[in-house]
Length: 83
Image (cartoon, rainbow, N blue to C red):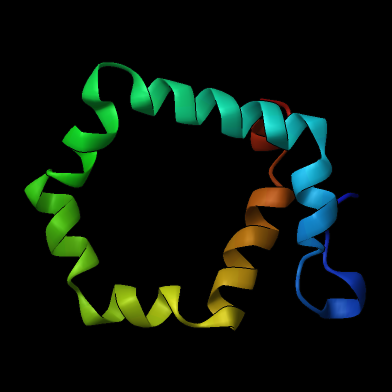
């Protein structure tokens, strides 16, 4: 599967970003979020700001092992890959 972790290591991000399904899903997500100020609204949402200021969230985002787990779960989810 493109983007899957080779031998238990980090996901192959090159293959993932070259996957047409992922590119399409990401492009649709970005367009939807950017339309009508969606991204600005999301970033100005107090709940999102509170979450991003949480040291546990910051620690997770800066933890390669945690982010690899998240990416692996996303790449193994057929609903995401079929977007």
